[in-house]
Amino acid sequence: MKQFLDLPHGRLPLPAFLPDGTQGVVRSVDAQDLLTCGVQAVQMNVFHLMQRPGSSTIQALGGLHQMAGWERPLFTDSGGFQVYSLIRQNPKSGSIGDKGATFRIEGHKYNFTPEKSIQLQMSYGADVVICLDDCTHVDDPDDVQAESVRRTVAWARRCKVEFERLADEKKLTAETRPKLVAVVQGGGSRALRRQCAEELLAIGFDGYGYGGWPLDGEGNLLTEILAWVRELVPAEFTVHALGVGHPENVATCAQMGYELFDSTMPTRDARHGRLYAFTQEPDSRLTTPFFRYVYVKDDKHIKDGRPISPFCDCPACRHYSLGYLHHLYKINDSLYPRLATMHNLRFMTQLMAGLSREIRE
Image (cartoon, rainbow, N blue to C red; front, side):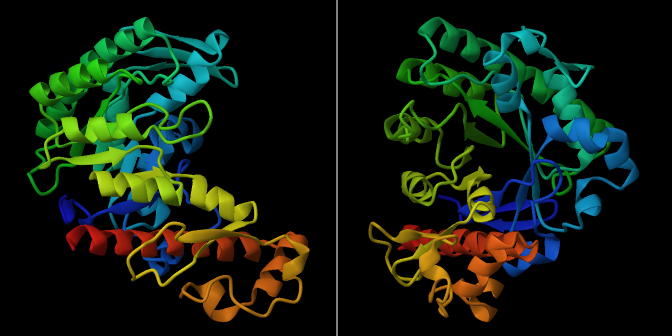
């Protein structure tokens, strides 16, 4: 496993968890809050950003970094998963073909192609650009998975051509050009995953991602397929476990060799009252279960003067009691989601630091 990734906006220590600022903001917190929590990079989504605030607005505001006040590395997701969730799960909303995807949202028609995804991501100033892929669910039939692999590889090839054209046009150097990541699809088929990985490796990219929903129909991590994909990609390339954010799943995938993770789960859980707390010193060797949930709305916390976790140094744990957070949650005060989000993000950065030490040892 690599120890870091050098990007135009700085060196990113690995492994790293990227909170999802899907629409240009990690909800409830600002850039300084993220830095306070130890967050080193964030991920945003081109599919949502092109709708709101819109590409012309983003460019008028100086790109995503300047718009969001974020000076560290920034990844943009291609929108492949959103196309899947919008169209594959609701065919009336649009269609997917070899050229790309066409869909309607709020009365607007969008034509979304591999080239368009790359153009938008490059114009937004991303440090890591992800190729548009044809996402599937692991339970989809073999013919759907095979078609997804064929299309994902074809789209990745087109993405690379457009990426290199734009990099040359902008006269980007090795230091200023972003990294280009391709996504390995294939569902639950080891043969299709191998085919997809080998064809993408032959094209050549800076890194690779695990594509498709990482859980089965019962919510269990697809451990064998995740391990297989990491095995297929040579160790010199970073591999991103796209959409993996549950702490136990992150730890499992990091031990397989995955270096990058992103998810809305920790921040969404925080806003909804589910906080993470280590059951042991985070700098010790992690043993299962290494964390527990704290449900802030439970009445047992009304007069609890302790912090959320004795092992946490986030602003919520340094300055406030669990009883006070319970009060803020109950009265729906806007301070609660900020403090809770900072706590869960600090938990994730502490987890990354602990996993990094374990892997090095």
